[in-house]
Length: 182
Image (cartoon, rainbow, N blue to C red):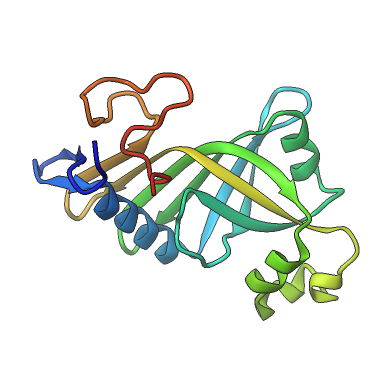
């Protein structure tokens, strides 16, 4: 099914269907409004470990990017178990976004240069030349948003219960209606 004709139905008070592109744009809008998020990893002893993170301002294309220290607990945890959850919340706007995915550390200096902004200097005083600086990339495998103002819930990617192009769940490795479809 082509991206133009594929529809995702948002649960809640509205039965209005969204195209994959519309749903991706809405998730992007909500993520950018939130400014910060909570990144939850699985600690080495199997417990959930959450910490606030600043998301780098790029359009949501299926990956989220963060700066981190390569020797940090966050990076050690995702190297052992890459499954993560990223939560965004804007109490003023009354919306929430949850993104599940797999994370990896990525030492791409060119990308770090493109994503860098002066606000990061508090954590990385030498900029992209800070020793041990790395990027954390979260590849989204599921995304869901809740908007209290509109009563709208939008699910994308592998979440149970979300609509797919054929009405059924995706096969392993398949992502019907995904925000990563191009």
